[in-house]
Length: 73
Image (cartoon, rainbow, N blue to C red; front, side, top):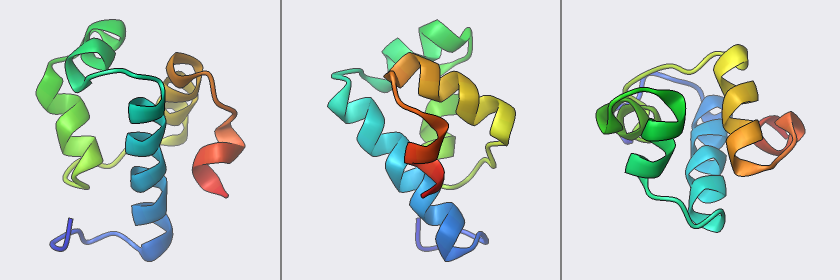
């Protein structure tokens, strides 16, 4: 994620998204199926290549059984 154009704060959100997925015991493919998206969608978000908005974070929070605060603190 060294090439990310995003702020340190945004990189922390991305880090927490990946951390939450791993803690939930899910693979990127599992999450992609739940989202109805290709695995590359999840991969690009986790690498900081695709920006995720608050509406998407809300969906990830539900999948990972976390509060939105977990991702933005």
